[in-house]
Image (cartoon, rainbow, N blue to C red):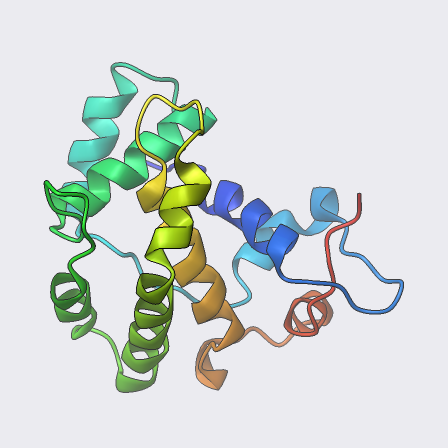
Length: 174
């Protein structure tokens, strides 16, 4: 089953990446390419992905923002990354990364630590959001994805004009 959450996350990423000159990236034309500039690995097992997708798709349309928020919350909880007290469990997340090569592990672990250091700010940012589920996991994941993309290992970066623009923090066109 395919979920549109990478596209949703990409929009967040490009909004916070900054600006460069008078250029912008046409997201209508390049959305998919931008999401694939850094080859990210799945952050959960296929079983957890399927379980959360199956359970949530009974309640929410899969192509909605609420689905994306609830999917990330479900996945983080099922993987043990977010406990009952809503605290990030870094050791669980870092343990999952051991299946990947060292340069990717380091990039994601550094992103996890940086995002964990600002978790209070992330909590404050989601506090008043009107979503069906707590959006903390979503914004935490956006933070991790953004920092991983900014520090993407060279062997995982796509060599293209659009990805070069992303690397230079060219914003999306308004």
